[in-house]
Amino acid sequence: MIAFTLNGRPASVDVDPDKPLLWVLREDLNVVGPKFGCGVAACGACTVHVDGQAVRSCSLPASAVAGKTVVTIEGLPKADGTLHAVQRAWIENQVPQCGYCQPGFIMATAALLAANPRPTDREVDEALSNLCRCGTYGSIRRAIQRAIALLQAAP
Ligand code: FES
Ligand code: FES
Image 1 (cartoon, rainbow, N blue to C red):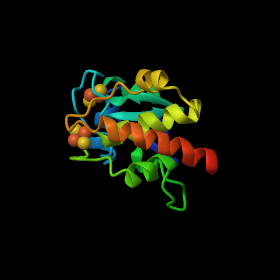
Image 2: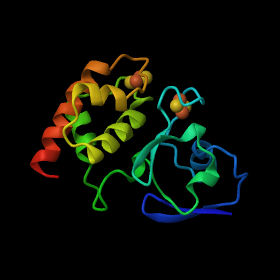
Image 3: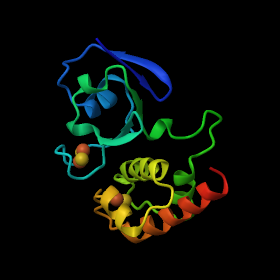
Image 4: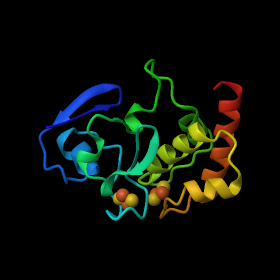
């Protein structure tokens, strides 16, 4: 049995410890915000937070999150339902096209800004190596700047 905290609540699963966290979330816990893109930690569609760090859940064995705190896009809003500043910035900038990659970008951005509220363009590039087949990169850059401003105004 692997027990951890998922989006603020206790979760436990009886699975192969090597099963990737992405598939534990999607198949065993019905948490489908994290998406499968490449399966080899290359695209970022499966990004979640583990103890506050952005990780690519397709390449992380479930055993690695035992006793830890996992947050997916479903757990990013506040308890009262208020969207995270990164989510609000994304909506304001109408970033998504097909949307498939977007939970991963949002989770990667949220982790970056929590650790570094004023990242340089280079730091953004280093933190967000996610891929978007719809080419929303320009909108994402604008949304990140807006999220930075929103967080400065109301952290
Ligand atoms: S599905 Fe995990 S990085 Fe692409
Ligand atoms: S919005 Fe379609 S893959 Fe990124």
